Length: 479
Image (cartoon, rainbow, N blue to C red; front, side, top):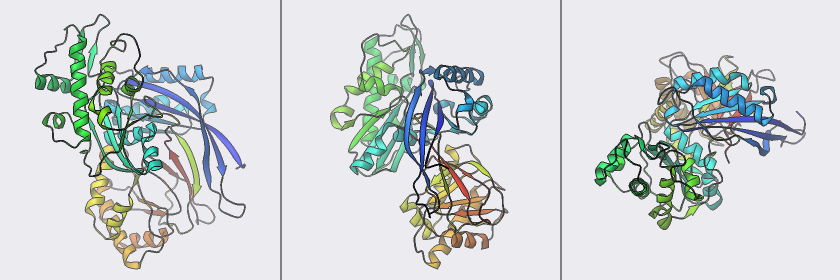
């Protein structure tokens, strides 16, 4: 590889309401010295084309029309001036009510020839919250200012919230609050009311029915109720109505530290940050009114609101970049099952890792089940920092914890894949291999690789007489 090189990346975001395409040019550089193992890092990224925002084509309420999505992508390739052969990588993020395994298969089939190595990810509500929080800049703000920041990603059907503390995720959740939960016709009539809105109107004694005239005052009142519910959510107030509209599959938004700042992303965020003149019905829904109600609510008066770097494009800008490296020399694998492709990463925090080092399995099992609910992949990589100089007993307890949980919860036949930052993979992997399992399992344990939650990893054939494994980390880069 030369000192610097560039690739073209395409990202596609297919949400409940909208679909969009982004092209980014990514610059890579070898940051290692002449006599060191090469380490390739992204040193620059530039968005070179942003598509229009398209309404997501659906065959019914939840199933994507794959052929029409393909037509959208093909047209955006044409308009951008790029050909499929120009792109070296691509990523598709499917979110909201569209995040279903069937849709992932449809999209992968329809779009596979637009990029050589597509990552297709169906993001459950929790992962969608984390992705959006990265895209909006909330996570980076929390790192730069060493504080807690909550990002509220308000789309068409749901609001995903994530709370970062100095960059670490400490809480996430999702509720059925969004801009398309009331839809209106071009002549100003109500044509759709979601179940969650019906609960809100019933609790407030407000009458709204399909076919009614879409009166601004009534729609604004619904927006006020939504804004107040979001405020109570961030203030950790118990509320029966709020509990009743919690999105299935999301975590409970529980935390203990006070929130220092909040940030908004998603389609409604544009209406919050940048109110525009014109009819409130211009998008055929209540999104504009919801944005107005949030801006006038206690969310703005009682919290510090920071500007988002990306709003509606938070989950797509720069998606699908590659960071390539090689593993450390203290790797362990008991069988050559390589190459392995597109494996999602489950990253443990320092606190979660310490619990595993102590030999306790409960927290790891709970987090693994969460990951399996959020992702439709049968495989996963368990990632952690590790310790520079762990004791024999620490490694032994960690090995027992990992084998116990992974063997119990991974589908039969799937390998136990461990990635560490510290140089301890050989000792850990060898201890894991010595432990009995209910199902036959391959063990692959590598170190000197940095990954993060939401990354996808490829592992190539071992090199240098099997001493190192080439690793490609497909990082979803936002903002």
